Every structure is written in C-alpha cells, then in structure tokens.
Image 1 (cartoon, one colour):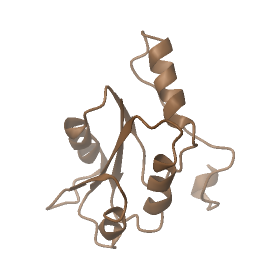
Image 2: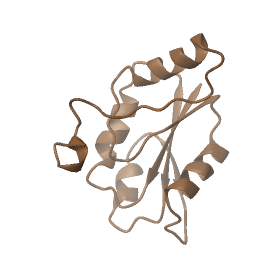
Image 3: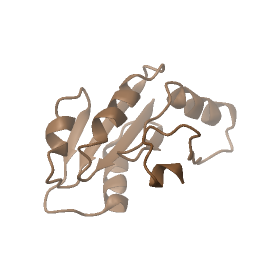
Image 4: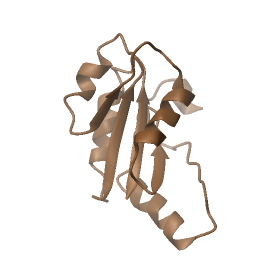
Length: 127
C-alpha cells in the first residue's frame, strides 16, 4: 500500500483540488493523510469534509519538514508519497510510483516535479 502524505498550512484555495486529485486515483490501494499545521484560514474545515485521515498539529506552525516527518510516523504504507497542498497529481500517479518501486528493487526514493500543464496558471506554477 502507498501512503499519500499532504502537509497543509493556510492552503484553503488549493487543498480541495489537491485531495480530490488523490481520491480520483485509478489505484484504489492507498491511504491519504492530511496534516494541518495549525492553519488559520479555514483549510482544516475544508479537509475535514473529505474522506481522508486528518491529523491536526497544534501549537504550530512547525514547518513542512516537521509535518512531513510526523506524517511518515503515522503512515502505514510501505511507500510514502509526499504531496504539497498546491499539487494536483495525475490519475495514474500512484500507479506509476508503485510500479517504479515494484519493478526496480534497488530504487529507494524518487522525485517528481514540473508539469507542462500545471493546475494553477500563476507565475510561480509556470516555473
């Protein structure tokens, strides 16, 4: 199984699309853990409406590295996939990640980035 770990801090404009893309995956064998790092913009309310595991981190923000590590500690999957709250994965992303690890036993990590057609057309998403 693959654990999708999404740290969130004040991401109310992007988190819903991010989670929906994960839930729309063509691979049904995953868990999705969303960790809220003490958001103050209503992100947590949005996350709680989704069928995902929600972890609330109090007394933060702690920062994305801390939140990712905390998520790794509560995940149950053999593969950990970290996704930022403003990322919209493709429907076959989970299957591709699982396939890479299954077909290449010497691979211990991978990184994916940059999409020719990002979900956000803003300046930063273009680079």
